[in-house]
Amino acid sequence: MTGALAPTKPLTAADRCDRCGAQAYVRAVLVGGGDLLFCAHHGRKYSEALRSNGADIQDETDRLTTTPATASEDER
Image (tube, rainbow, N blue to C red; front, side, top):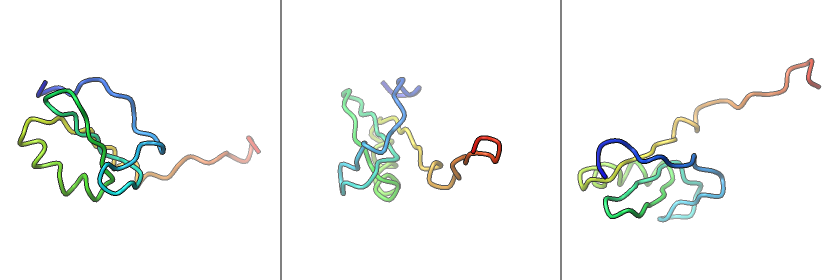
């Protein structure tokens, strides 16, 4: 299963890094069908090696730099 990323659910705050337990922002879908979850730090550290071994990488680290929407004055 290399190439197109298999449909996966977005990562949530309940998803934890398999290496350190921090919130996961990267999912590596392995060729054998399993997956590994990583925080941004460990995702950067391991994603190239995993990708070179055929894993598909779902990277949601861009969520770390986006500002969540807030309620407007009319909604308060």
